[in-house]
Amino acid sequence: EADSLMARAQSIIAENLGENNADYALMLQNRGMSMQEQGRPAEAEPLLRRALEIDVTTLGREHSQVALVTHNLAVCLAAQDRLDEAERLLRQALELRRAALGDQHPDVLMDLVHLARALHARGADAEAESRLVEAGRIFEQTRLRAGIGAVRATFEDSPYPHLAATRLALGKKAAAWP
Image 1: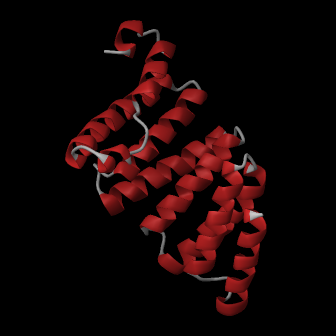
Image 2: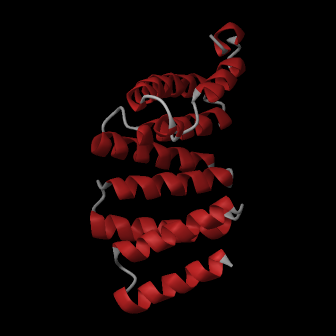
């Protein structure tokens, strides 16, 4: 039912604002992410690609929203085992977010973890480890800045389980859980 409501909202936005604006792109992205979460990445992909195309045109290639949609498209592609393209897009998203948000932002952490997961899936464990070590540093700094309580609990999942799995794949058992 959610998808039919989102499709209707997409139609209303298109009818009233047209299809080449940020609102329409956001609707496409939300609908695509909903499909992705339902295990339908092949259906989500064209929506995310169109959202990215619109955002690049309307907001500019360097905008943080472009980085977000690029990241989401990459995750969608990774879910389809299209790891080369996913890795390329995750690298783009990471660089865009570093430029727009700074090196210590939680979204940079998220990009590093997803990039490392794609690298690990392709067997590029040494680079994956390096990215996860960097993610761990950002995680710790971000966690400390958040303090205690509910705000601290809203952060992305820890990069440490991914780092441990990568180190085990590299044969670094003692370093897996320091």
